[in-house]
Length: 158
Image (tube, rainbow, N blue to C red; front, side, top):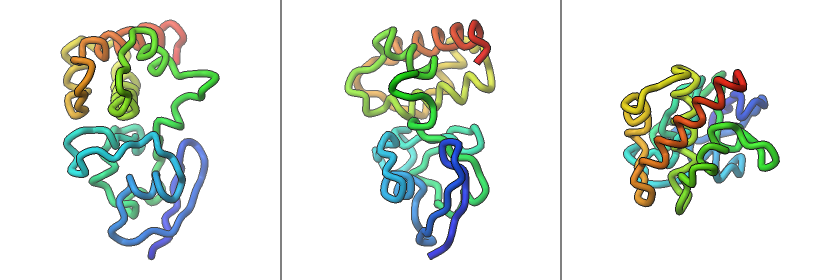
């Protein structure tokens, strides 16, 4: 076991983890944050996407020991039930959510993009979410949600 200290959703945390423990398992099992989904387990579907130092990563392919001293944000750290983040609200407003399984990873990938590029083109949006698979929406509504979120975030200076 190793001791790992990091910032999780804005709070300093520490936990004991096995040397081969995946960040996905740490997030879900040790911190009970189940918004991060277990999908393919190989980094291909994006359901387990979290942000590590503002970069979208697949938590199913990252060892917990690799996050020592880093900032990790899961979907639970983006907004609250009472006050959704503009990206989350945009997904709701354009009905970009169907089964919802891919949405936490999709929202975090969109958030990471908009932090880096406040006015992305449709092509840049599609590239940014290309590592996140969705079996329900056909992606157009997701692209529209990200475009709306970009507009709102610029207006609100978020």
